[in-house]
Length: 178
Image (cartoon, rainbow, N blue to C red):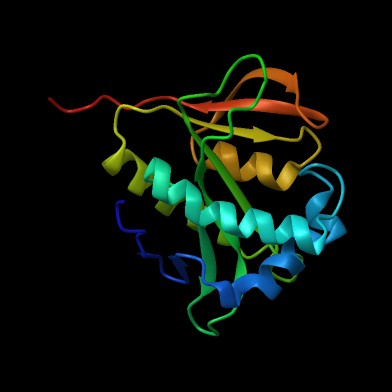
C-alpha cells in the first residue's frame, strides 16, 4: 500500500482521515445543504460511518482516495476532497479516471477552500498518475461546484443521470513528458 499523503496549501492541510474525524465527517454528510446535490438526502450515522471506512479502503486498493480538509490556522475539519473509482453505471463511463470530488462544510463556504484543495489534488494526481484522465460529476444546479470544476480546468462533455441529473466534466489529460 502506498502511503497516504499529506498535502499542504497556504490555508489547508489535506490529510488522511482519523477515526476521531467521525463526528465532523458525519456532520458534513448529514447536512441537508450539503446532501442536496450529492444524493439528495442527508446520510444517516451508519451511512456516514461506512463512507468514512471506505476512505481508507480506496487508498489501500487504488493508491488514491479522499483526504480530510483541515484548516491550518484552527485545526478544524472543514470538508473533504479527493479522487475515487466508484464504478458508477453511467454513460458516458468515467471508469478508469480519477473521479474528483469535494465537499466543504456550509460554515466554510465562500472562502475558496474547495478550489484551493482541488488545485492541490490535481497537482498531486498529475504527478502520481500522469496518464489518467480526471473527471467530476456535478449537479447542474450546483453553481459553486461548477465554478470550482471550471476553475480547475474541467469542461462539460455530457449530461447524464446518477441519483438525479448531473454533468460529466472531464479535465483533459496533459501531455506526459517522455
